[in-house]
Amino acid sequence: MAPTPIEVRLNQLKEHLQEENNILHEVVDSFRELDLITYKLGLLSPEQSYATRVSWWPMIAVLGTYSAGKSTFINHYLGHDLQRTGTQAIDDKFTVVCFSRDEAAKTLPGLALDADPRFPFYKISQEIAELTTDNTQTVDSYLQLKTSPSERMRGKILIDSPGFDADSQRTSTLRITQHIIELSDLVLVFFDARHPEPGAMRDTLEYLVSMPMERPDSNKFLYILNQMDITVREDNPEEVVASWQRSLAQAGQTAGRFYRIYNPEVCLPFEDALIKERTERKCKVDMTAIQNRMEQVGVERAYRVIGMLEHTAKEIETKIVPQLQELIQGWKTRVFWSEVSLGVLLVILAGAWFAMTGTWASLSSLFGQLNSTTLAIMLGIIGIVGIVVHLKVCKSAAQKILKRIQSENTDEHTREGLVRAFRKNTGASRALFIWFIDQPVGWSNRTRQRLSKVLGSVNKYVQKLNDRFTNPSGKQIEPTPVPQEATEESKPNHPNPDN
Image (tube, rainbow, N blue to C red; front, side, top):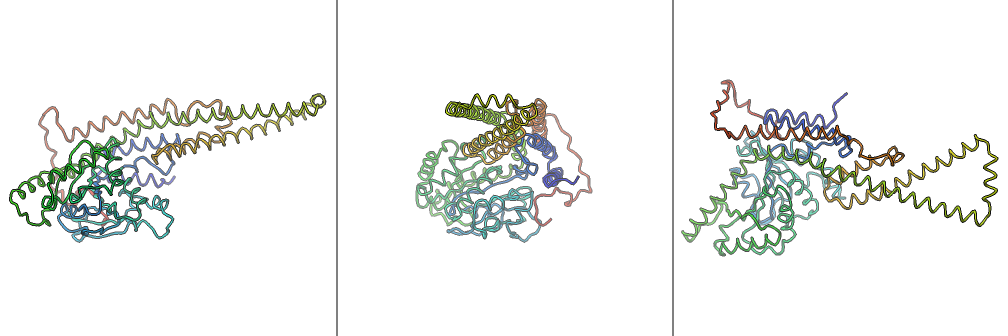
């Protein structure tokens, strides 16, 4: 049998990871085991995979307002001018930057991202289509891919977002931004230090500060005050920082610190030597700290992928399945009371009809005269009608609970999975034997054992990573000899649209 599209995609992913990181190559198999479990539970459809919800390449997102100097920072980091810069909104698209051996930078359309499973926007066009009724707003209206020969981009992906305050397609922008935040290993949030009173951008602060602070991985967010070289000329930098800290505290960010930087390549001359020395020193320290975090995303990515595997497996066992069990019990309860109410109503109506017409005696006499065949046919008809009514009641009860699922669950993946699984558990075959249902479809002791096996593999993967990056015993490790024939061509491949 021919492999499914998702199997082809995961096999390609394993081939890339085997060259880059053999530990993550094994993790793909564990994600695949989770997929098989959730296919039976109904949480995923056969063309979906938990592995596609993870960016397997280290990913850095650059977010912020349009005047915060994001593009200037990216150009400085790359060592060449890739992004257009200006005091007004320049780019209204999300730009994905990746490494290329070609010395000339190239700009490719959004379709290059939508159709390539190695990038974080694979099949994003489907979500964009759901967000807009304008047929002219294609994936190319929102996304573009740019290549860079900078060695700093080897083995990682960088995403530059359009300014939040400058985008007219705000709903779509926020949805894509949320998608980026979910997948990124490091999120650089830029603010323009020249505007220390951000009262007009409270909704932006809410999205960039309040929501991230509720996430378990909030430590991946770095908050950066950019263009401090101009600020120190016009204001007291300590007062500016304090003002921003108050604004972020109101949005929920009470811990952590600001990184204060500027671009030394485009700054104006300092008039005061003391201010120059102090500003340069602070900028250098913070810029080094930011770039060190950017260089560490490869290591963080490996641990984060394994952490996502553990989180997903635990969430299935401790949150999703219990929630599904509760929904099924609620469905059974609703069906029970609906049928009891319907039965009581029918008895009352029948009793009233017999009392008013006085036909009970003649009806009893008629039943007594029927032969067994006729009586069996009548009982069969009554049984069929009863089954049809029962299925209608079950379907009606299920529809009401489905509406509740869609309104109560804000997480898109959780909502979609619960809806799919609940429909699988409330089909006609399950409705017929509703009173014998105890567990969701596909949930058994064997399933629990398979989940435990996946969770057990997490520790093994973490230990392998620890062995690669640490040496607690302090023993001398002999370096692995490298064959002399090894050449530049033998280096692992990275996302590269030129290949």
